[in-house]
Image (cartoon, rainbow, N blue to C red; front, side, top):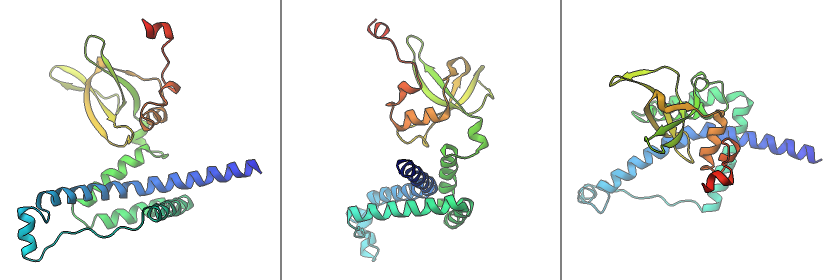
Length: 225
């Protein structure tokens, strides 16, 4: 009975994760669009000079009423599970192509969706060739007692800038590792981290709480000295 319950829990978890990864590009796209709209509202909302002029000619900016908080979350969870089940049954490509075709009809929004989808695909459980070529590395910054940043080495290809060889690394953000910064780091400042990409993602998602699982801990004597 216990074994059956664990199998059911793992299956439900897989459905939920699949639904999250399928919907995340849509959520990121909507979030970016909403941020732009809210920023524009800040610049020319109803209480600004521009907003008052727009109101005068009949263009009003307002907010719709929201559904109750807990009911809204229940609907979100049901939708995520539903999409996850749909994707796990073999409709992942169809879902992605359908949503992308809808967003591409809107200028600029399609580009945002395509970019966010590529980034989500990279961190998801897929056979993405670009992700396979990436390697977790530590990048050191500073000469005396340098700081070390955990990053993803894009490839082993080097680039020549200012008479020095550089590597391209991606430094994710915590706890949302599908965003971050791309940096050109000197070759001598990059060294292998000795962990898998899953380890890197785990550390960023947990904001460092799981670091002890992937990075050797310092002994008490070393820490005190």
